[in-house]
Length: 331
Image 1 (cartoon, rainbow, N blue to C red):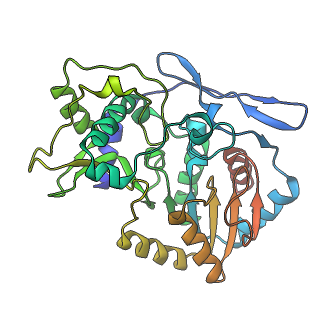
Image 2: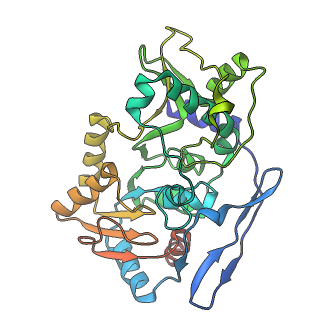
C-alpha cells in the first residue's frame, strides 16, 4: 500500500514555486509571507496563526533535549502543514472553526445518510485537485532528513495530507489515515483517491461547481443547490459505500494502529510533539502515556496545548523556524 501511495503521489506531483520572506511587526510577532504558485499566487501562510520569535532560553533547552534523546518519537499535527497552505481547525483567528460556520462531517452521518455522503463527495471532488497538489514545506523536509540521519525512531502524524511521504519520510504512521486512499465499507476494496476522482468524473459529466475555499480535510464549501444533482459512485466491486481511508470525527483510530504506535513510543528515548495542540484525544493519549511511562516530552507549537501541564520543554513558535535552527545546530 505504501509503494502504491508513493507512486500515486509521484504520478500526480505538481511543481510549485515558493517565495519566502518575513514581516516583523512592532510587537515582535511575525506574519509569514510565503506563497505558492499554481496558476495564481495565494499566501500559504494565511493559515499560520500569529506567533512570536523563538525564545532563546527555550530553544537552548530544546536543543539539549534533542541531543540527549537521539531516538525520538515524533508526533506531528496540523501546525506542520499550515505552512504548505493547508488550514487547520483550531488555530486562533485563522483556523477553520474561526473562519467558517461549516464543520467536518461526522462518521455516523456519513454512514447513515445518503445526502450527507453526496454533500461530502461533491465538496471533496471539487477540492481534490488543489488538496492533492499541496507540497511539503521546510518542516517536512527537515524531519525526513532527521530520519535519514537516524535521529527519529518513528514519526506519527495526525495529518491526512501525505506530505511526510512526499518529503521522503518512510518510518511514518498516519494516525488518522490518508485522504489519498479510498476504501469500500462493505468488501474493503481499495483504490487511490485519484482513481476515485475518475469514477466521480465519469458519472458527473454535466456537473460542476465553483470553489469557495479549501478545508483541512480537502473539501470545499458548497451550497445545497450546488450539490443536489451530484452523483456518488458505488464500489466497482460490490456496489457498497466508498469512503476515504481516514478517521472521520466521531470515529475511532483502529486498535491495531494504537497498539503499534504505543510499541514505537515505548521503544523511543523521548517524545517530541510538533504542530499539535493535542486537543484531539487520539493524539493526546500518546503524550499522556509517555508522561505516565516517565518519558521526557518536548513540544513545538504556536499557542497552548492540552499537554502543557506535564510536558518538560515547550517552544511556542512557528514549527519551521524552530526546526531550521535545530537542523543547523546538528550539522
